[in-house]
Length: 294
Image 1 (spheres, rainbow, N blue to C red):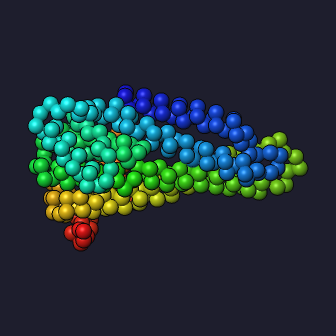
Image 2: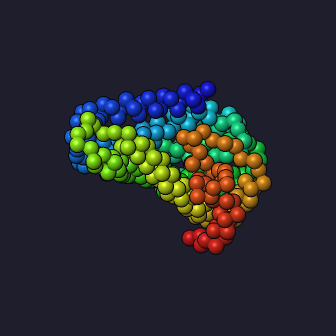
Image 3: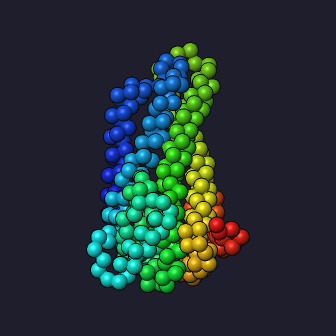
């Protein structure tokens, strides 16, 4: 129920912001007569393409805390929490970023990092991870998440999603315009754009959206390799991360809410490798074994 509410609230906020911005810019009308105003359409596409991504990024920290029930450690309640704060602080200094918020949530083995700004991020680990790994392996996982933050992966992914969304919206309507013109070529009069336009836009948005998802998933897999290597550099040793990945391969990792799923240490590759947000554990280990640690 909580995730459904978050989904509806986020989408309502996106629709509200888009409606206001499009009305203020006066670009919500890009079709006129028998023509297409490409300038208005491009601005419309940019607003639609980036609004959702940017809003999701800006509210990612509170959304992640609420959706996972994560508890931010302000005053350590035990030696484990004290060690977590100390370790994250050390890794943050090594990475050259400010100390992020550190949180613990109840769940199966997993961890994630999120936040719109690298110097004001959130790193969270599950109780399952803390119970299933030793300190060396947990430190490697924390290094992986800190590497995500230091690399600016959350912002980069937002920009990629925004650009791809823009192209999906723009190209779908351009194709729809030409298909509708082709279908109505023999018509002497037109009372607006017909079913051909709207049907083509829907079909193209689905097809282009699938292609965009493949690109986003590819970048997500690429950044996992980079974060693994980043953890090895922060620890000046790649063995802890290799051991952590091996341990993850033996554990049943928990599902994260959609808004932070791509930021997790481990994900489910699924049947369609093209859409997997995380590479297979075996490939990550192979890549790390062949990587050089400076």
